[in-house]
Image (tube, one colour):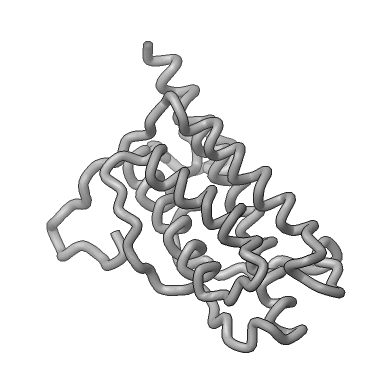
Length: 180
């Protein structure tokens, strides 16, 4: 999933593990929210006052619009669960690579956010490997105030994306529950 598929080929279909996904997605949201308030990670920076730094390299917002949504007004839109899940997985991989590139001396990111991303990717999505993906932003000079500010803004963007991921998971599980 890290590299585009050759023309005409398709990535393997993804399925959510219904027994664990909702809880793991919620846990990721909780851990990101808690990490944003962590004084140790941002040392002297009030992260809650900062804006998010968005880097949209995936199509998650476009491909995960629920069918018959007010967001898709005027368009004949069919929800493609597989395309949506692949995009969500690519988001997780890119943010994971970005956070791994940050030198986390107190292991705050590793113990909370990265651990939750790994749990979600490994236990929620089928056919998932934790491969290397391109980072969203350079995390050089991470120990400086500027580096901590950048981490804060990227983490806030991830928080927004994790809210979207939770909504996607809930939507898909609701669709599946209605089909049974």
